[in-house]
Image (cartoon, rainbow, N blue to C red; front, side, top):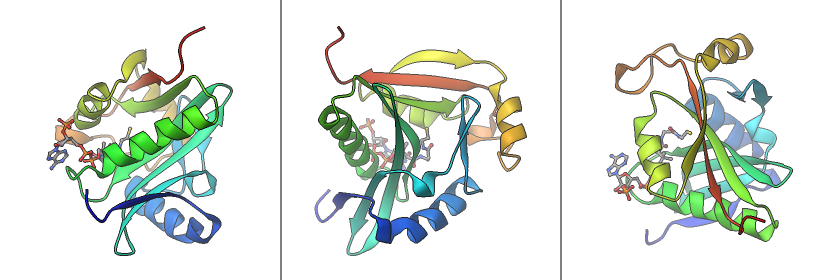
Length: 164
Ligand SMILES: CC(C)(COP(=O)(O)OP(=O)(O)OC[C@H]1O[C@@H](n2cnc3c(N)ncnc32)[C@H](O)[C@@H]1OP(=O)(O)O)[C@@H](O)C(=O)NCCC(=O)NCCS
């Protein structure tokens, strides 16, 4: 990925991050497991090339877990996602955390492939969780990738420290 740089989001990026989150996720919020997040105010990483943003990941830390809240490659299949994910794993290790976790939806087959090929394992399924998510964020579409109805949440995790 020559020429691409991964760097932490800093305060000067907040407006750009807010705009990207709105464009990519249809609102200023992200919802997972019944919780509402405001990604533009979270820590995270950007991938840039020649000053242009190619990818964005935001996360929240909860106990010994780094939770990925939003994760996007603006140009797919060029290693942007891999770089962002590795930055998040490295950050979790730096912070002395045990695991990296995320929630995705049943339609997101590309993301399921991506995460499982990078050490993540399924650790939870919430059938019909999207009913509650749409109550919190009505902008969530009813149909997702490959024309699959978006109904369920799937949790994946990767341990980054040896289990006690
Ligand atoms: C998930 C996501 C962040 C991955 O980012 P990415 O930059 O495409 O990832 P990479 O280029 O590092 O790797 C993608 C994999 O798909 C392959 N690929 C090839 N062409 C591709 C394409 N057009 N689109 C997606 N993946 C492609 C890559 O070769 C790689 O394969 P591998 O797993 O066998 O190594 C990205 O697909 C994305 O933004 N998805 C939409 C938002 C989303 O669903 N986010 C996750 C929410 S939980």
